[in-house]
Image 1: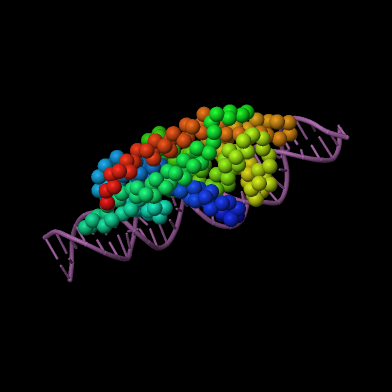
Image 2 (image 1 turned 180 degrees about the vertical axis):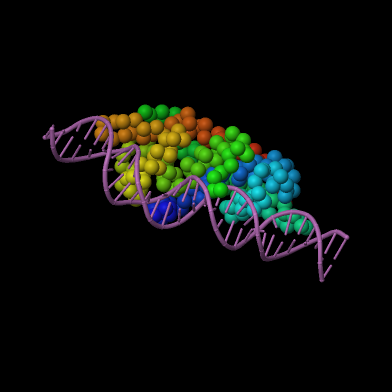
Length: 109
Length: 109
DNA sequence: TTATTACATCGCAATATTACGATATAATGT
DNA sequence: ACATTATATCGTAATATTGCGATGTAATAA
């Protein structure tokens, strides 16, 4: 027990859930918002920005990378992180598809 | 350890993370999609629909209720579940605000 | 080469989530 | 009252997530 039964659900349902999990931690939301707001995408000061340990930030960054939302390119000693616009739109559409599927007009109950 | 440091983040970041967590399981996504697609919101057959045990479904429904995305009204012996349109839009906007904050034009990196 | 700087990974403890059998509750039917 | 039906809650085992110190790695500087 304790393991999600992914085989019971559609590809898309599993994909949305997996992506949503990445948004399901305030540190990762904060990282994304910081990357958006720093209109240039030079980084490394995330550890100062958020109050978490370097190891913890690194772990969150990895999860964002794994789902494809951000990319990191080595810039000398440090790493430049930025949002992947293609994937960003893709993920936006995943959520949009679900949200727009509900016709707010039909207020039953 | 193991506990999210919510005090480090903004109200809105914590709220979005909390809401995203509800979408972060395919069973809950499936439940929402089923409620959307069953244009009437009479229910109870979710246990047959998804392949999970009744206790598990009930637990997922509670999480959806707790975040306010669905409402359940007692209908005799069974319960009618349906999506709360107000909350649905509210949550949609929470995500939309984040997604639209990124200007896809500025393709740096 | 050795030191420094920036980040990644490992390993572990604390906590949270998932799933479900068992049991409780609450409304209806006989 | 008793049985039935539908759903909720409890308790617990399996697994996942979070956070961080310690350590590894890789590029540059002295």
